[in-house]
Image 1 (cartoon, rainbow, N blue to C red):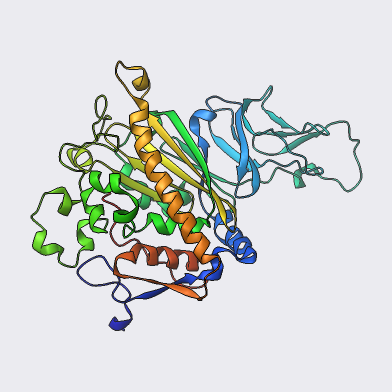
Image 2 (tube, one colour; image 1 turned 180 degrees about the vertical axis):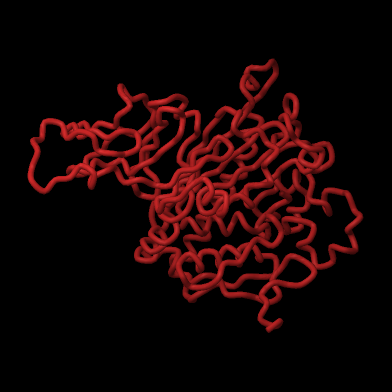
Length: 401
């Protein structure tokens, strides 16, 4: 029935108030375990950069969604990834971090079981042959691996590059013009936030909080000061469709070109950007639940989300620049990092106050207003992953992609 349609017609918004997710879902340990199993271990998550495995025989190991994972570059250049666990008695194969194998083998440091880089068990160290043991039945356990924009993504449930493209290709397509795979890490900021991971994504998906929480950001992006993300969020947007002023269009303020103190870009624009890319000043690609990437005219910023418990998460922001850019005369890296770090700090404080209330909420669920249509879509995505409903796609493409 048309009356059941939750989204408004003619503009981006909810047609009527909607209940949020249950308040208990933000602090209940059992719900957290459920979400880790149904969402985080079955999604494509950022793991490392392709530059962490530059040559044949290099590897990168680390934790992902509570699992120990190792990615390797095989002879010939292809990538593979496995649970970083020996099939003998479960020892860790490779220490966390990046490195180079002495031979094209993954060798357990405990009892010397050895696997080729396709994961096949080829030797069992000093252990003697025993009746009933078949090497072929004890390979390393593989996980899905794919690449995009110089990132290596892992899916613990398995999957190929084609599966990754089907799942996230459209969400990341707005950044197609950015030379992500050629950029280098320039700065990393990591912080822990006392909130559930869903609280962070809800905050990301609305700008009702922007006027009261982000004064500098609202000055840089005037439409945010109106509590909306894009032009079409305004029910009356057609009457201003011809307006080019940033307050209506969603572009950065006049005279600003990028997210930085002062709004001024440094160096030449990144190669390959269109006039529209440059004019927007910020373009988002979102790969739920683990990362969003923002393309600016002069740099790229990626922000990853890592759940640490029902009421705690880690946020890691990484800035990427062209090779040699930070060494150019007059380049001020802090001018770009300082601005976004300030915004992220404001978001972290807002998420923590939201979490403190949710953890003791005297109601079963909150309420979503007209402008929180992307929050509602996110809630439907969560419910669908948990097997409780159909997913709802993004309505507007998120913050002027």
